[in-house]
Length: 306
Image 1 (cartoon, one colour):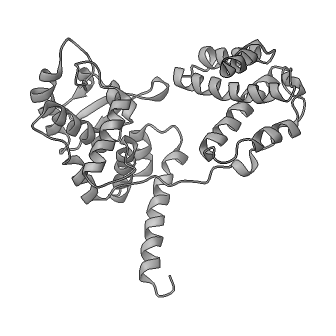
Image 2 (cartoon, rainbow, N blue to C red):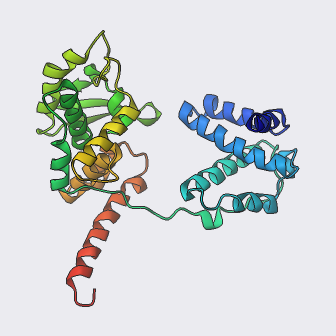
Image 3 (cartoon, rainbow, N blue to C red):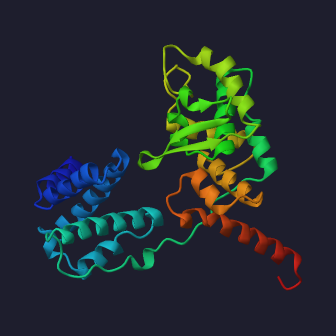
C-alpha cells in the first residue's frame, strides 16, 4: 500500500509530464528500443521520488546542491554501475530540458566519484572454450542446439540478441556467412569459421526438425518449439559453464573471446570493429588493452623485479 501511494505521488507530480515528454522523444525521435525507454523511465521515477520528498515541484528549481544530495543517496549497498546509470539518465534528461528551455538554470555537476573504472572484458583460453563447447548432451536435440548456439557466438562474435533473432534464411551455409541485423537496424555480413559450419548444419538437419512444433522463422528454437528466448540462452550458458568448471561466463564472454582471439591471431582492429558491429573504434580498442594486461601479468611473473 505504501509503495502504491509513493507511485501515485510520482505520477501526480508536476514533474511527471516532462518525463513523459522526454520518453516520447526517445521513442519517436531517437528511435530508442523499448528496453532503453523502460530503463530511463525506471531511473527517472526513482529520481522523482527523491525530489518530491525534498519538496521539488518544478525541474527549473533543481540546482547543483540538490543533484549532489541526490547522488549521495546512491552509495553502497547499491551497485556502482546502477548508481552511475541513474545519475547518467537524470543528467541526459535534464540536458534535454535545458535544450528546450524547460530545465534547471544552474550548470549540471559531473558524476564525480561515480565515474566507472574501465573494466577489461573477460576472455576464455582455448582449453576453457573446448570444455565449455563440449558440455551439452548431444544425445538430445536441445543439446545439439545449445552446442550450435555457442559455436555460433564464439565463431561469429554475435551478440546473444542477434543470435536468437537470427532467421534460417539469414544463415548461408554454402557461402559460409550469416546476415546479422544489429543495433540501429544495421545489417552486416559475418564469415563463419570452418569449425562452426558443421555444427549449424547438424542442428538444422538433426535437431531443429525435432524441436519445431509449428512454422517459425527463427533459427534457434526453444524446447517448446517457439523462438529461443534471450534469458533462456543466459540460463543455458550458466548451466554449461558450471559443468565445465567455469564461473562468470555468459554469452557475452564468448563474444569477448572471439574478439580477443582474432586480434591475437593478427586480425586488423578495423576489421574486428566491423565484425562486432561496433560504431566506434574506441569500443573495440578495449580488446587491445586486454592483450597488454596479459603481457604485463607474464612480465610480473617472470621478471625478478616484476
